[in-house]
Image (tube, rainbow, N blue to C red; front, side, top):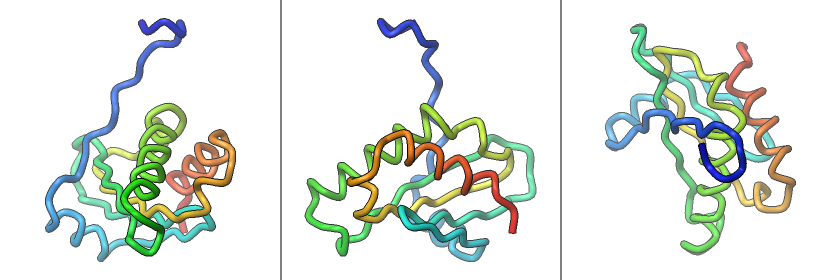
Length: 117
């Protein structure tokens, strides 16, 4: 247990290859003000996987990495339990993510992961 007293949660499995990211693009898109979530049901019962993308439109490498780090931590701390088994997610971050409170990011991410069209 870390010094904060909260049990540490494992990060979800990650998408690593370009082909995996491109496959998820064929799935459902859930748009939001802070990010876009692309969802693909793989049709198996393996653990959910997630990938993160931040385009160059957002800013330079420092800004993009800050956006990515905030998304990864919000997913790990708040929203990882809302991911469904057998599903791949790609989260595309936007610059507005830097100006909102961290709790709002987690809440919105959790809502987007749970939503069904």
